[in-house]
Image 1 (cartoon, rainbow, N blue to C red):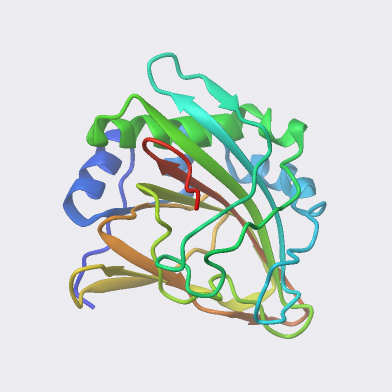
Image 2: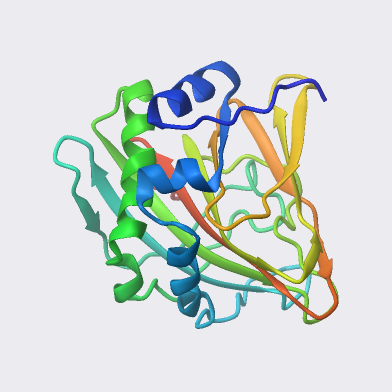
Length: 245
């Protein structure tokens, strides 16, 4: 794997990293500079991950994932985030061979979670950076709040394997990681053999991907001393419209 590890420290460097290699990995300090969410802030938000319902759509028969979902429109000019009526998450089999072609209805994000200023800044800061490079006036945004646990011995952050999401950009924040092993993230050039691998270990670490240029996966997690969990906030940005059949 020969792609260099890009670790931008601010919004301008993130834009440069995305343009150069199709991805950027931001340290907790760098992402806190954009969102205001430091380690203590992520700990305070942990209660929202404790209240996630189980994902009933896993086709591998597992029970390791809990999840909520919401959709909204981000207008770049005025910075507004406008929720749309709750809708199913849908991907084609082109992008998700395991769960594609299904209308997956998840419980909506809690209103109080989505109203958190730091969460709104997470959505907006990446939307603004990527909109400048893509030259779009608005993003159709989907937000996924996900917990992968090891209560049954193994948890799979990406059961579909290495994939693209069928959007323009993907942002992933690590909200928490407790008492687990594994979970190595791998990012590959979609058109060639090059790639990188790293483990997101500290809350607030953020990964941003150009979904047209790279594919990604995260390896399974296993229990540490006890059964643990890996919590993430995943935000996708798509121009023109949400994904629909």
